Image (cartoon, chains in turn blue, yellow):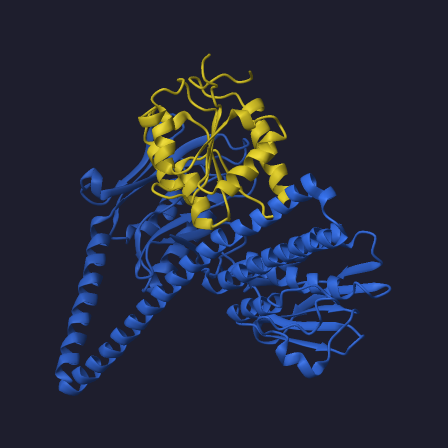
Length: 437
Length: 152
């Protein structure tokens, strides 16, 4: 259920109008409440079914609240009948009004106006508000009760529904009258839709198979790796003495290779998951994401001559866990490729740019790459450095690009060998919501 | 002499994983306290003292370390059966599996497991994780009534 404020707001802080929308269409319940200055508290609310399509309903609600508010500003005396009836008069031409009753603090009825025969209680909406005096610091002086009949209002809703139904039937009749041509067109469209549905079904099936595949990969490929690592360690513990230097080297290579394969499996699974998972669209603070990623690399960069500079970062709209992967990869790369640089510098920042996009960058002064191969950078298993130089699986940047693509952004890189690299990318800015009360 | 009462049930179909897990628990001298079972059906037979386990001493284990991918009845099936049994649902279950798949994670916790542990690929991490698990469940945690004794 949505709640909105009706505009324009009337005179300074004296009352507030709210309406609740139960659906996107025409029916609402109006609440007009008056918030008083300190010392005086008088709240009068009117509940009624409101046709939001009619602007005079809204205007009437405003007028009502304003008059009641103005009346209530004056220290209210229950004896002052003219003032009360002025406040109440505004209801009088309301066909839904059944009665208005004012009681003093002792509960005695001091004013009563009954306009219609009271309907059954189930058809009556009544509201009671407390009236306090301003002079004696808000001591209750009485109650105002207002009773409204819902009968008529509900009638008007039914009428609206009939109108809609009738218009829909009329539209249908027109559509039929348009004849075979239209039906032919509709049939074609229907066939297209069926085709699309079939395609979607096939896609879903492929997706399910892919998921089953990656599930079994993550289970079944990890197990043998765990065994290799486990039994090698046990071998080293038990039989290290029996191995000569060459034998120990072999064992080291086996252990290293199994470890590498583990990383490769994890990266590939992350990559395949990137395109399968349902993407979230949340407001994401990149500053928080980057802070967290940088702190996770702390252990790795300890003792290195490396500065990580975090500049201003905007809020974007997207999937936080995917965006964390983007920064983990880009910052991880920057840290890796500055490994052989004296006075390494990694800089992360960005700002709001054109067309609702955030323009972001991750820059380093590390090894860089030959711009000739820039287009190969984001392909799967593409590596521009030998394994001996820098460790890596060649999946990270492909994953980064895929995530940014899914967000509707783009990424490119600039670099020269030995002069560092900068990754520029865009992500949708978080849309500022309209003020909602 | 009464046969030894095993306090930990290890449900694991892969003998290599059994050996690695036993090695880890052995570092805490807990390996004598473990019975290794190889599929879900065997686990349920053991817990209910059926078939070959009719003669085992009574009492529930203090914890079940449960692999998810097993022949016959898999881990999830075992959890479902245990949680629908008034007696067996008291036994703590630690899922011990190869990978963190979100749907497994979700389903296991929905079914009411006590912990979910991913077996680390790196052996040192694996050792550390299993040792910690063994110490916690066999020595630190107070098992539910009806379990075999806490410390021997």
